Amino acid sequence: MSNEDNGGLKPASSEKDPFAPEFRVVARGNVRRGIRLERIFWTTLKRMAENRKITMGALIEEIAQQHGESGNLTSAIRVTCLRWLDEQNASLRESQPGKEKKSG
Image 1: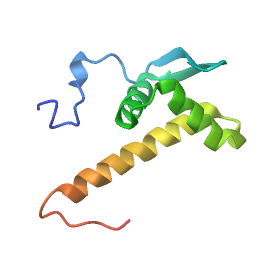
Image 2: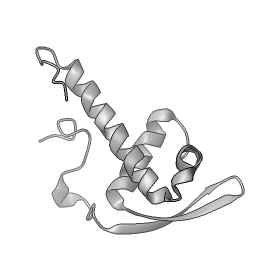
Image 3: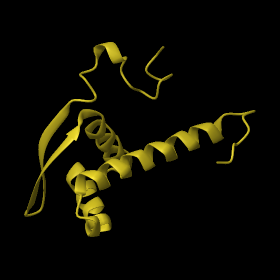
């Protein structure tokens, strides 16, 4: 399977463990946040930021402002990543000719 066939992801055999937690410090202006997420979420955040042409710090700050009331930033980040991936998947399915949309 080529990288294009699987959404640009490297084959699993050459990737680091996507389930492994990774701690990073993300800075935006004068705000520094220490965040521990599984690698797969850091990869998704990077793609989201690149797609929007913003820094990862700006993206995380945006998520924090939109979902700050929950008090759990890592959970908000995970949900945001999953929603974005779901939207990307839906767009790909809709762009395939001859495929019916499934409601659900």
